Length: 261
Image 1 (cartoon, one colour):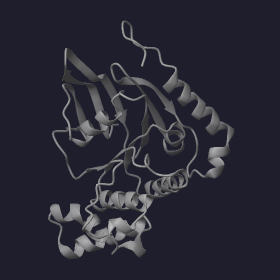
Image 2 (cartoon, helix red, strand yellow):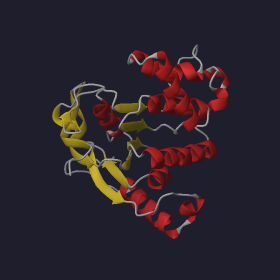
Image 3 (tube, one colour):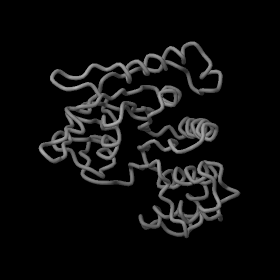
Image 4 (cartoon, one colour):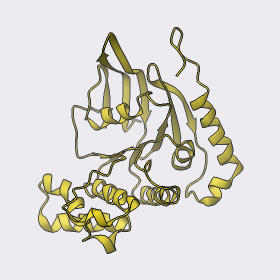
């Protein structure tokens, strides 16, 4: 079966004073159709670089990223990207922010409004559709950004620490909402996070990255059934998986000849 996303021996280097910094070194990874994968690892391990390459916002120094059997050569509507910063237009309402990508894509007015309304309903912002971003909480702004990505109906959703700036309660609520939406639409999701508990709670597989150079250190299968609930978080199996991922992140050996991260 052809993977939805393939990273094929990806290397990404950057020139720095006195030499070259290797953000990613020989990363190979396949992600299946409709799979939810989280990516964790120490700072500098190339998590965000990996997402940017999949989104077509960056290009590898060597190797290639393939989506649906086609090499990624730039951004495309089949791949939606959500960042930690909401990147909303402050002068546009929630509805107009969500419609923006559709407008750029040339979608007609009636269809644009229908799809925006559907996406806004999906993230629970119906009552705030005509509100400006300055009147929204942080969690509501992020939901607006997620709705904007949903509206263009991407096959792949790439999420770069989207809940990292939110308070703990809002973060948990958005995790549950994201899983609920994913279970109904079942698109492929690649979700970068620093939070090990979040990584285990959301994913079918957790990819643990190591730094210097950035590489896949370990992949942990998460054998917890969906839907996931508060009882999932309190289960012994969840605790065991969390500890396994935590250990993989924080007790990595450095490659020969390189200092530990």
